[in-house]
Length: 393
Image (cartoon, rainbow, N blue to C red; front, side):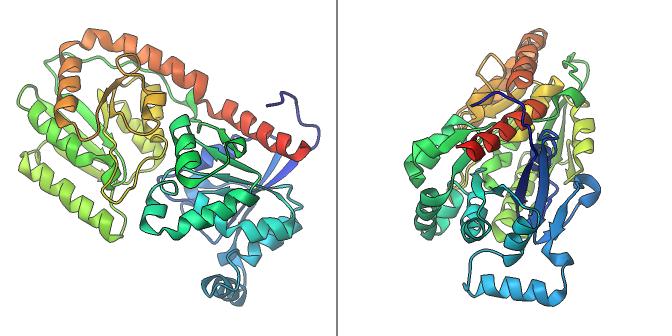
């Protein structure tokens, strides 16, 4: 990658259908921490949570005259074209040099728009698009083949995901780059946790209610831990309306009941990002045991919540899943069990209970790693350099 300061601004279109779901602070930070030499334009179909995720230059199809919205969506629905003409017009109107499609499925839909607008086309994969989509609908293997033939660059969070995209989806290695997501390190205070056994052990779980998050495994392990120490558990997250999410919610509630954890668990639902961080500092441990779901869904990379919680100074207990070991090195910056290994989770939590004096060494190393590898400002500069390199070449 070339190291230099950009002379002229780069105009970028960020394409994503909804700007922006409650759980996607990481995408907001990815765009807003691009350096000032980048002029960002967000093109979406509709908006939500703008009180949390407002940025300049948000262009929403829903704000256009109703007939424009209906016609554009109808053309897409009936396969007259895969892309939205609104994306083409905004790209041309704003003289964009780069079209950055967020998620592989969006990238495939945007192929025609990139061609018509004559932009460089970058696509970032985030996880759901790597494993779940192709397994649910094999047409995605063919679609991704077309995408990889045409797109200029494919980005992903970590080396495990990169290899998955190359080996399982057929992306040429020359087109893929690992670009970790960044967090607001400078705004997250480092407060190493301490605990004495006269107080309850407070455990935080924060995730959407999907099978890949492993929340029932976390609760089953905590069902055993409660036999040894006073315990308080907070779960921040909720289920989306889809059937598979609602079924997972029922499984979570049933697990709470099975282990008689009702009096120990607080269910807070989805919360704004600032509330998540406020709650983080009230807790001792972050538990995030991701798994490969029965429908093929995986993290693809790693939950950004692990990076943020490590930055606060909280010990992490997680699993050897996808790119999580790229962030958490076992027994150095956290503790990792095998997927679905409830006994392993119990073992790691018991170690933390018995060795609270050793937490500081682990959390110091984790914070240093986050500052070095996952700083949003640094990652924003690196992303801008990727754009610039592609424009030059």
